[in-house]
Length: 253
Image (cartoon, rainbow, N blue to C red; front, side, top):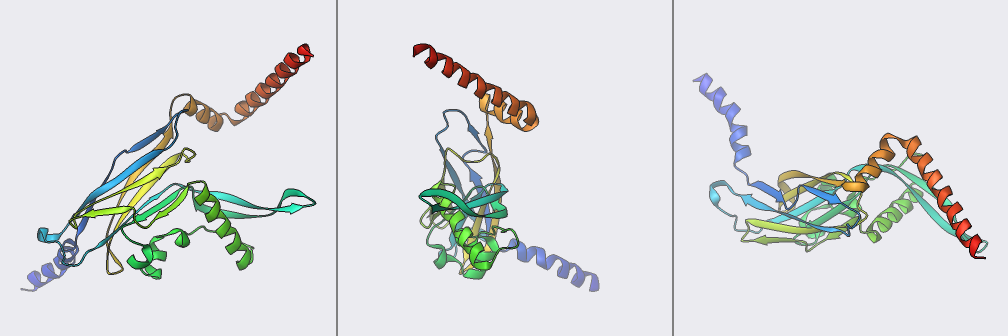
């Protein structure tokens, strides 16, 4: 009898974990290849919500999808007009910030999750953990954080779409996320969250590889593996082009 009770106690958490809904996500492309003619792309994130017993809830649930690029250190410089000339007046370093971030939801995030949940799962541009470098005053750090968000948004590298997720019959969902032409390379992670009354009740992830191909990949690989030779070749090429231009225009005069 005691063994049965013990077995039931150990099995109960597993049964409870299986009682909730489950996400089955997928993406339209597992890899995005950047060539010389790359002008951007559209990534489709879609999937299904599996409910226990196939019974959909009477109340509608919310879905939020996130596409996040690899984190990297960044330096944001603030320019000011001094003596009629725009100059770098101040700068601030972020030790870790996502190189790309896009979030889409079926309705505004403020109506989907509370501030605490949004901060825990980094849902929304205002909840990104940018990891600013130490030593800066809070007002300065906040000013540069706002500047970074504004700059990346204008570049198309940060985006937030409050009507970007479509849910069909409470079971199927899909979202389209735009990939700009200047997107950084690396391994990207897609996160899908199923939310019920402000709480995340299921989550799933997938990976997308953004990589260069062809001649662009050769250049990038050479610059990374042979930095000195690449820099030397770049200098010699610049000198050669300058000498050629000077010789061409000098002969015409």
